[in-house]
Length: 183
Image (tube, rainbow, N blue to C red; front, top):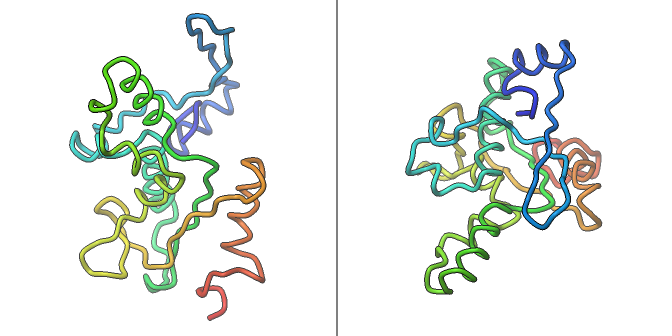
C-alpha cells in the first residue's frame, strides 16, 4: 500500500518511472501541506459497505496490506499456529476522530457515533487484521487465509518514530515476547 501504487506491480512500475505520490493539501485557514495519500483505494469495494463502515481508513489500509502480503508470500509451508502478526502503530483512526470532533461541534454529542472509540483506538489496525474467527484461537484475515495467535499490536513507549523498531524487535528479537520464536 503506497501513495504511488497498490500492490507490488503498480508500486514498482511507478517507482521505476519516477512517479511521485506527493500532492498538496489545501485547507481553509491552513498553509498548504504536502501529503502522500494512498489513491485508488476503495475500502467499500474490497470489504463491502457494512464492513468498511465499521473500519477506519487506517484499519482498511492495514487489512488490505496484510491481504497483499499473504498473497505475495504464497504458500508458507508452516502450520497455522506458527504464523502471527505484529503491527506497529503510533495512533489509531484519525479520520474517525476528526469526524467525531466535527459531529460533536456541529450537531451535538448525541450525534457522535458509538463506534468512534473502538475505531479510533491505537490497535484498530491490528484488530481489523486479526479479527477472531468463531473457532477460537484461529485468526482470519478478512475471510482469506488464516493465522493463529499470537497477534498483537506494538505501541512504542517512546515516540511514533521508534514504533517500527519496536515492532521488528518484538517479532524477531532474541528477547522477544513472541512464544513462536522460542519453539
